[in-house]
Image 1 (cartoon, rainbow, N blue to C red):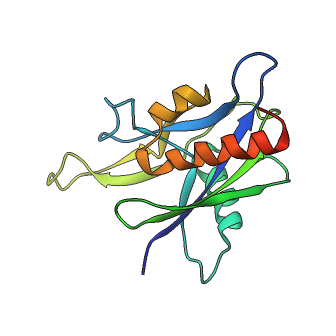
Image 2 (tube, rainbow, N blue to C red; image 1 turned 90 degrees about the vertical axis):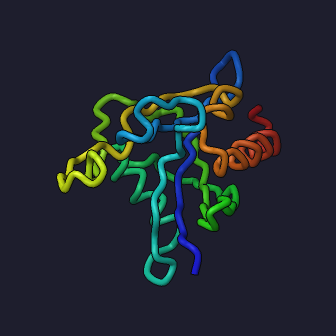
Length: 161
């Protein structure tokens, strides 16, 4: 059975320049020195037997960033499979009124250094930024880049590009 993940992709359309999205740099020692391909849509795993993808996306947004997700309306952009087989469902919402002040990143525990027997806590993400779509395309992990294409289409259909 594949692992399921869901996330919220917030966007805003500035008066000048391309649309921007809110993405987060993954935390922990593996990602610390990486930039391109080391960012993610705020997202997390869920059990489809007990939670809807949208409920999971909203919950994970709050857990990862420590702020409430913006109010509806949400639109489902699609579901994509990573090369690992994991599936991610992404929802989009206008985040123009979302402030990044007061972010409090969730944490996870990991044995670090490897095989040391010591467990350390690390932030799930270590920073979050608004980024223009072209820059975000380079920064996001490969399996999430199709969501940017879907957002482009969504904004074009809404006349907001």
